[in-house]
Length: 243
Image 1 (cartoon, rainbow, N blue to C red):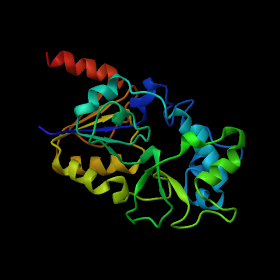
Image 2 (spheres, rainbow, N blue to C red; image 1 turned 60 degrees about the vertical axis):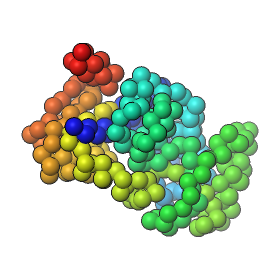
Image 3 (tube, one colour; image 1 turned 120 degrees about the horizontal axis):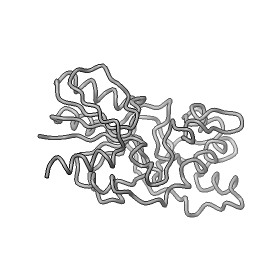
């Protein structure tokens, strides 16, 4: 059996990283003038790059040194697609996971979507917080006129108004979906496109699905089993069942 694990923000909660839609979640806290859904867009990066980078830095980058938890450790040798950009699966030792929404510690040259460009390390450790405005613009090579294609840099993160490209591993992810004989969704609210893609494949292939979350989202599919618990509790259950 080839089990595909698809994880969301709930998996990283025990590492001290807020979920997206919880009370303190990333998508409940925006800026003074914009909602998170407005901030996390390519349009905002292009029209107001400083506002975008400042928000991104405070809401995501400050968690870049957090460590993996026992769930990441358990998933280290598993067939894995994660929606999380925190890179904790890599820190836990998974060398072949797909980070379908990008990585907090990476950046790319600002390019037209669909182009294949190198993925580089982001210079977050060089940010001067005492001069945050000028430091961010300088490090990401953004002039006062705004980001310039093939000159400026952009955090390697898939934004709301962008689409999945091979730069984020979409072809490899879809192959894993079609090769899977079972899918386990852990800590996700099913509110992003990748989970809907996977569910469409599961329905087409009529393979079993497991949904792991303290408040699991119910999906329109017959061959599904719900586990209303944390990912850690689910792992404990699986380990006990297999012994």
